[in-house]
Length: 263
Image (cartoon, rainbow, N blue to C red; front, side):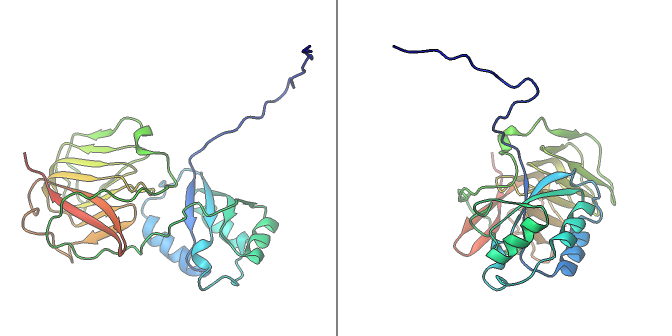
């Protein structure tokens, strides 16, 4: 015989599981002075790039050479909050590093956020366009691309010195991106005109992001931190022609692949 027991639910609260997008910082050096310098170089001209995003500090890249390095988590917390980031947890560190993080009030997660360390932010020259390759699937610190909201559409030329950032979505530009201008998106970038400035897609780590342009003449292209400048010219088959750019991963690291669009 079954017996039903009366339950009593709390009036003031409920506890439920939640899934939230977070940013992961893969710390590659214990030198916080250098970290501050490089953050300023990368984000100094985009003061609102972060919006108090929850952050997990992944210490796994340190373990090969700096497993015993002491990290001042108080100073690191201050540095990151100055960039409008909200550190909440640490993972992948040695026992000493994790203990220091706990003393600083940071929670510990059981394993690194990104089990595969990304290649350095350089890319081997790709003189010839390549057929699109299926990049190896990787976890990313942002929500999946299909969850992004509608695109930001710009219907006027982007002037030299101007910067446009599509936070959390794709960017569509219907006019020229002039030299000295910069277009940034957390998702894809579409330019239905000449792209002559800088284009940064997947700005928060979305490795599936792509860059499309009807006239590809960029000063710089970047996807998920992997970049290429005019010091490595594009092949004649894609220069000043309709083309797309995607990120492909292989045994020798990540590369930007530029492919002509034909139709």
